[in-house]
Amino acid sequence: MQTIIDFHSHLGDILYPGGGGLIEKRGVKKKSWFDPITLGQLTLNRHFGLGKIQHRLFSSWFVKAEQARNATATRENARLTMDKSGVTHTVCMPIPPYVEFSDLRKASEKDSGLIPFTGVNFDHLNKLESQFAEDIKLGAKGLKLHPIIQKISLTDERMAYAIKAFSKYELPILFHAGISYYYIGKEQSRNSPENGNIDDAIRMVRRFPAVKFVVGHAGMFEIAQVIRGLKDFSNVWVDTSFQSPGSIRKLIKAFGEDKVLFASDWPFGSRDVAVKAVQKACGGDHQLQRKLLSENAANLLGFK
Image (cartoon, rainbow, N blue to C red; front, top):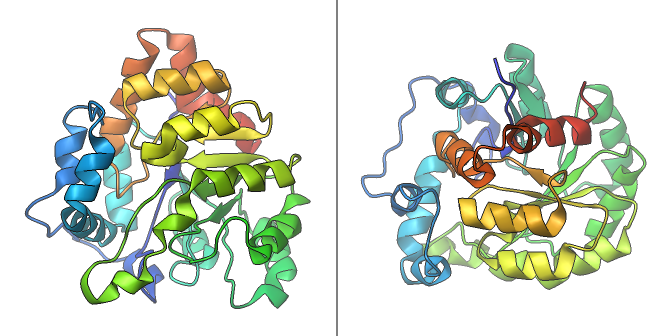
């Protein structure tokens, strides 16, 4: 069986307190009756240049769909979608304080196909170095940063402190990139979409040239800025979540075939759609397809 490593996914409720409690629930189904994310994925994420416009015009519907998908992020559902799409391993990203590394580690002990990353609780930076040491010892394979949900910009000195503390382990750091929203109505004040801007990402990458950074979603709708601003950095990889076959081909051309990583951002994205988008982008080149679907991720994670 072909190895397929999904480099960006989630377990648990990453938007609300106690999110780790969702992981072991069973029989959870998506409740939203209208899901514009599904509509976009019918065309393998092809938006024909209208993606950002559609997302802004119907932002409340997209957020409702995201929240409905977020509520399905159980270990049971993760395994079901992995088996359906042929994904053998998936990297699981925490977002403290809602989902912690400890939540993901427990899940990975029950399913060896789950690869846990660790995260940063910015309320407890004084414990960060000892936390990282313990998490790495227990199997964390990288670090996840989410400047929007965590409301800390990539250029904030607290972010720099976390990156410095983690850098000695020489493991990848995946950060969210791209303008996005996660809350609506009375919770709108919790949004910090500006923290997903690409200029901050460029400044961060330039400041830490020895750190292996993965640009989450390749910047989403800001993919052109990611290509223009980050393609010449040797310490940058990109993941393909929410990108169309045409956009994935652009990423391969800009960053090189060894720096592009298959990802779905499940449960927000669909794994089977993400796999098909990569396969379409590779156009029958099986060696290239193996690189994107597994070999590049395995090399970055230090797997044989």
